[in-house]
Image (cartoon, rainbow, N blue to C red; front, side, top):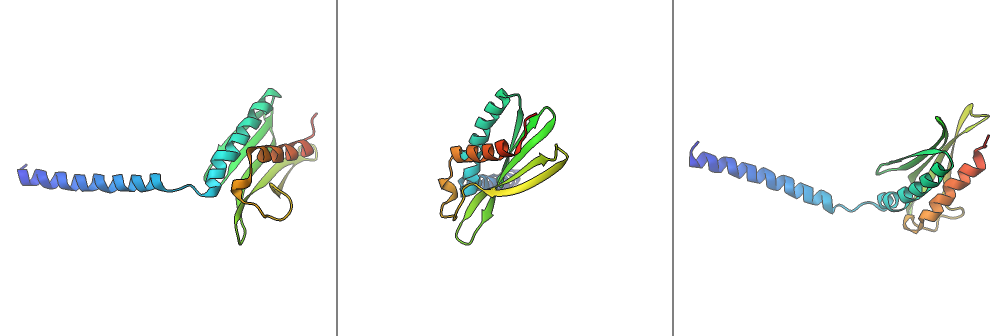
Length: 150
């Protein structure tokens, strides 16, 4: 390979490396949406606290996280008791998290899914206003009001 050919190969490699370095830099600079921030800073820590306590009471809890939702599923033995998913609902002025809750009724024969906002009343708050404690209280409300202990 001649010096000119080596120079050309080095140039295109440098160019390609620069391209990917800039792309990586842009990806790192992208800000998380307020809902993604809510998932990582509020929902997941709340679910982790709940999991610890539920496990102390003989339950197994799994947590899943994505950019668009956070889910805690509680099992008694191998049987799912409740699945609590936080997702985003868009209103004209804002987006807010809401809960989709799946649980068993009729002695475990029927799966029922309900939706609920984390706060009652007019949605005059923002996603950033919701706390870890509010998420915990919401999960516990659905869990304790709908699950029948045997």
